[in-house]
Image (cartoon, rainbow, N blue to C red; front, side, top):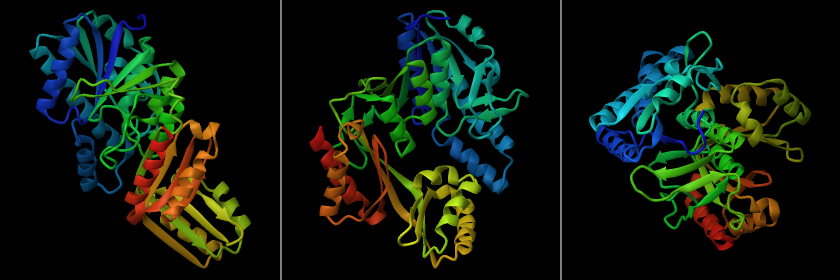
Length: 405
């Protein structure tokens, strides 16, 4: 449809669209590019906290809303941003037009709240519009089923829309604009000495995204990897170069970053009498929270204890199930802890040199930090640490990461 480089794909997050003034600044930035004859496709998120506000409004009306109706509501946020951006561009004399799931025929699966894009049925109309100097502004985060119902792609799903459009239009670069000017070795709001990572590979970024770094949606990274699309993470508030997520990364930096997830809970079931049944029950039943819990589940045959981790948002589903499960195992006690940080250390160097993981663990042990090893794989080390010790632990871990650079 287009040769690589003929169309610039940009995505602007909610912080970039949080007010009329910010939308105008985004429009001015885009307009500069059109004056140089660029073809642009711009994907926008809802303004600021609009999606959260819409969900809260629905929760006031219904404690158990129909997922279909919730999607119908949430999809409006991106449509508002889309029209406002076009209005701002047209005021600047730019040829711009808005597009949504229906205009583009963005077909998805029928899973409301986390649908997956299957195909674009009507992308040629937009392709004809984006002559040099023209801008197509697309409402991200949304699609529609084969029967025409609106769906949403999951929180942060506008990233998926942008990368999927880059793939459909034959482009190899997608720019993601946010309030941070790249990927850092830790959250700069928590660690002031955090350093920017200029290049990071798909696998490392995927791990960071799944375990606490919210800059990119994990499925957008998978789309990018499949189509060999590089994602350039930049700030919409500066002109700084950002971080490139791509196939090569930077092998000279063995450990790239530390991510934090403060929204995890852990249940420990003590004194289990029937360990084999404990395992078989988790294989037999598949409540939604266990999809993630499989990654956080450990069973100690010696002490007869089981530890299960899950998102705090899944507590209403998880706790009744686990309470019944513990009773069925003749367990002595069930302990619930929501005051935990789950910290993941990510880098391809962990694969090349397995002893690197010991450096981090020994550093915490030396400072008497009580860290529970949740999981370790080839490029990730994940620990659970109490909220009280998390700040100290994070600084210790980042210091060790810096020493390895």
